Length: 225
Ligand SMILES: [Zn+2]
Picture 1 (cartoon, rainbow, N blue to C red):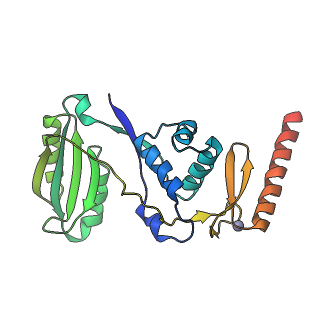
Picture 2: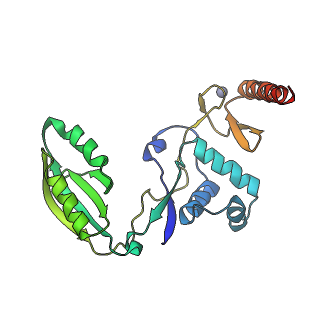
Picture 3: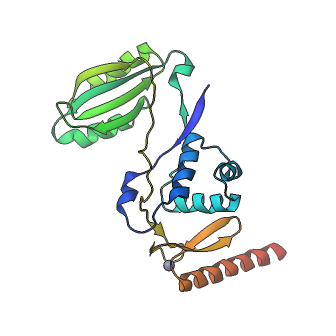
């Protein structure tokens, strides 16, 4: 079984204000898109920087909501008899939302897109074989208010990646770990345990540090009691 991984980047984050992605952020995201399981050390070596720098940047990208997670992408063809296709359909009337919810809940559905044109819905489907695909199509056809316009089988998948091309200068929002407010520009950081906290101003940094120390003190007291 061939398995690579892909990271999902919500486009909506681009619309928010402060932190601007630089060359290194982009290079890290690209490295992770090539291999999401690459270690910080490996990435640091390729990008000629240090492991802590990578750890810090990845943490920052995660906090900014840019890195939603690491999802294994399975190669359907490697399973042997997979059948995948694109279904162009049209949802009608005031039950559109319900219909789409229903489609989204179906296990075979790998993607749902609202599209322009005669059909207003594109459904990407993957089934374990042709019989499964046919059954799925029948199930879909039974949904009231949904009209299937066209079914296209995928013969072979040459590239199928979510996300969008990364560019320098993309701006993302980072939230303060103490007050929850937006961080403008470079954040102040506090390293606690293995993780980084990002703070918006000196007073939040001070308060966060105190809160953290009190918590650690309490934990230690518990351990000694
Ligand atoms: Zn703050």
